[in-house]
Length: 109
Length: 244
Image (cartoon, rainbow over all chains, first blue to last red; front, side, top):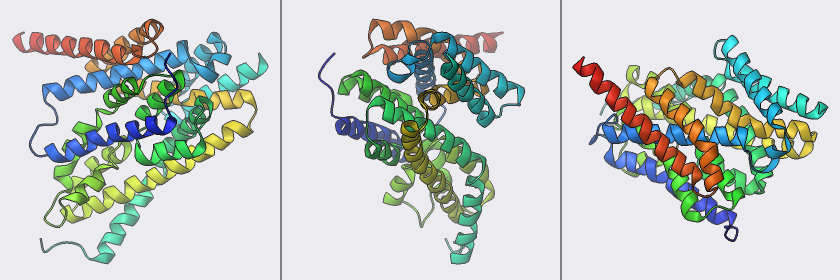
């Protein structure tokens, strides 16, 4: 891989690109429909990209999570989902259950 | 406009917004930013850099994408495109919010400042509340609500960063796991809309193999390929339904 990028350059690029959408939204608000075909496509791409990231972070993590066994990561994700669904969509409970499961199983292992 | 609310009216609107923000929205967002703070530390960035990210590019998925790709050593172009695609949803959100906020006393640069606070939670609440409010109160509500949860995000970025270095290793790893898990649960809630479910499913399948193919571009490729697939699938299904 190439030489490491300066973190500040990465942050600057991230901020500019993020503001670009918000600024463009002000410019074009009232002139275009927020539910046209192009915007639907962009929405699909954004969801797919985030799902790809989440799947990759759970199945093939880089960095710190790579220390955790695959079965522990999968068990923690399952515990979080079960808590979330059985408590009628309580995100805080689901996240807490998953995080606690990962910490416990990894700590014991 | 002559019916612009006086200072007491505005203060009451702002107070209501802060009250509604401090509760579930601040707790959920705060918890997810605890995770981001620990991702920042484990990714090799400093506390200041994490805070700058939350201050200037406040939108969690894009922030996580940026730190992850930076830690992998991805190129600037790859980071820019991946963050742009991840945060593209901010565009339709801003397009739909601004007409509700805009009035004679609020236009020009002020709208561009407000736009920097467009993110999912504040947008959802304001879109729900604004139609029942006088026009002049809406931007007050939006700004008070959004800055409250933005400040909570900043505080929790710092707390998460510090915690990740202070707790036992297995707990720190749990914190790093918080963000992917949080997004996973949001997906479970979103998956009722078929187009989104398709985009999420295809993206999850494409993500790991394309990452193995290219750590630099795999994420973006997965988003474009799976997202386009879901979009085309949705159009075909809609056409079938229309002709049936």
